[in-house]
Length: 213
Image (cartoon, rainbow, N blue to C red):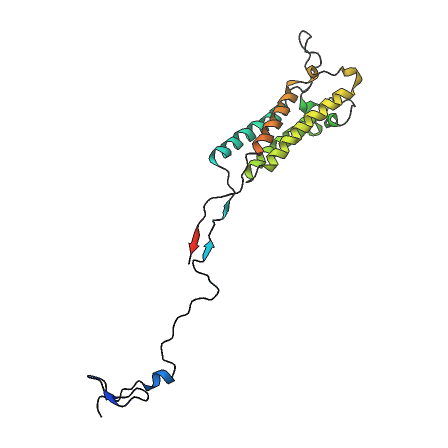
């Protein structure tokens, strides 16, 4: 009969305006019945995920400026100090006796009491101080200031080694007045570079958040 429909075992019946021959018998048997959506079994209610942002290793603006200033001053001190007198043997004499510059003293002065004077620039102790100062500048290119700090320590060690050598020379009559202005400037440069390296980048989290389900 036109417009007659069946539903499984139900008796035939009609729907107004239905398509002739239309049935719903296959829905249940062919897998078309609607299925319920089940939640994830392993996800508890109000499940959250930590969405903390990546760690930032850049220094702050003030820290970066401090690092640049101290590093530049420290490197300049070690480089300029190499060209100034490292010894002042008798500052009370008129006119005062001024020793040779670091670039005119052999690098043996760091470990030997042999005569360290009158050498070439390549063999000089001043060249060592210049190289250390350049290392302090190169350390500014790194995110952290470890290289600048190491250069500062080396500058301080160079100052200490020269003082030890002076102390080991009996006839020098060791006194801090024997130390020339150039060597003091190398020491000051080393201290500044060491401190400047501490203002390098430090890891810090810039943002964090939580995703809720």
